[in-house]
Image (cartoon, rainbow, N blue to C red):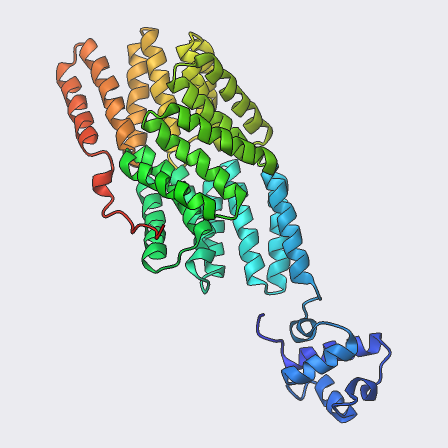
Length: 447
């Protein structure tokens, strides 16, 4: 509870409530206090003890909190109920509607000094902003939530920290996202703060940045820890998120059947929880699995489903990422014109500040399509743009592949020295796929 109000404020509050109830000062005072004491208290000339305020609150039929800080009875409970409803609205894919609810709840919680509820509302606003692609706003909300929770333990602060890391990750700041997540994991594990939900949340969130950096060994280890923690975690949404993240690692290891099974489990959990955006992301990842397995027709169906669902929920950034995967499948199925149209349409949703890795993927694919159409000038331009984005993001594995594509193009157009430079750059990234720049791995959980 926040520090109690000034005695004069409390005095006026007691007088107002007593008058509303038709009580005299004597009736309010008896049997423990005198009418003179109540008169002095109402005049603001004495600071009432907690014991006196509890007596008076009981006589007035209100909560102690309402007298001490002016907070209506059951307010915190009501706020938490409405915060849960806002969470359900967000889970149903209505991010803008949820954001309005969270903003109103944040103001109300702030008025009454409810720090925990303020943090919860800020977390919700951050998640809404992530879904709509407003990454700077998301980062600000998560940072503010962390400040409200500064006195709490790390497991309590973990969702805010994770949100901040994800906002940096989606902006293309892979190494910083990994630093935030690894530092938190290390502190949890070394400090004996074994909280399964917090650990699962952080391990599931770090798989994506690891994969994009080419640090596949660490991604695989994080996936193994997440799978081991899943039976201990009590939150179904976390387990579903973990299954979706683990699928990426299984896919990188060529374990396609297991990856598909993991995604099917996540999809079923999200279907029950009505988490529409996350369910759409499951269709997206399943489409990716199918594409890697050569099942292009099924991949197209899954990715179109993801695209439709994400369009309906207005999750612009996630929709754009799914569109890149759909365009890749369409190109491989001979529908290059439709693929190019989709890619040109979504590049406006990306920038160097957000979605850099996926913007690079769009430019890479547009380069391949241009090469197929024998437009080498356009192809080179797209490859160079992709390289610039990936170098800023530190996505080593993708950089190596892109350098090969650019080198091949330069060699075919007679620029041998430039091609050799591109190949050398690619080999440098291939021999150091991210892990070497990450420092020691975080301590392992006590499984």
